Image (cartoon, rainbow, N blue to C red):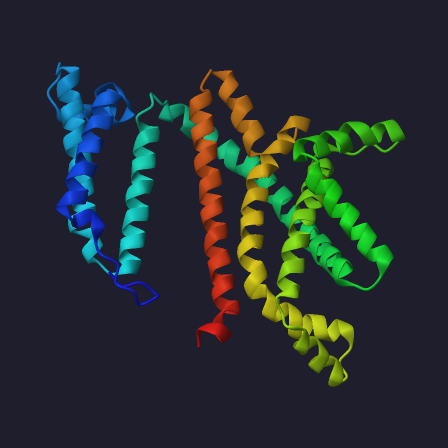
Length: 323
């Protein structure tokens, strides 16, 4: 197998002294955990005779798992690297979907509720996340510039801001804004509360990301730009930030995905976002698992979209390095 570092790694899994002990461990694990009665066993129950003993179900499960491993070792590992990655990703996604399918789900109930989850819950989640991400990015850039400035007051404010909002749990921040501010005479609605808490919390985390990205640019470029007579604002926007994005984008993308999932915490103050509707709609007919699985898949799909967008942005800012 050839990797980007031009080192030939030995195909360890295809060696008998590695493959057979691994296969024995798989069989032992399946037998120990009684795979015939587990979710995997229920998945293969349709291909073995009815009334088969648990031992037969466990053996059938082990054979299927062995065939799955053998296919990946013998066939998949001979493909190009990119095809290996996508094929294994697809296999694991199918396994997860089959695991969800093994539950006794009411697909008719999911079909009745999925439209409301998408039109109300998903739209609200995306709205809160998009606004919060925009505000958090602005706060992070301001905080990073303040930390790197020579102004002691600006540095003090930035350090206090990051210390406070990184030190408090996000859920506590939501409660403090929603329940604490009314005692001071400022009543904040549920949606603005969620946006404010997410923006302040993630803005504090992203401040350190932006600061690290800006500091990754050699000081000589600052000095050269100033020697050319560029204003500080032009130096930052035209020279420093475009280069630092290569360092900033990957961790910032992770923060965006985390914010998308943490937006579910605003459900505690009654916001009709995705998690709140999944929980309340599941209570109507005691179909909690159906709604939780549906909401989980929606969150996963949204995360995949953000991952693809992040990859495109990374590719754009890495052009100068990869040439």
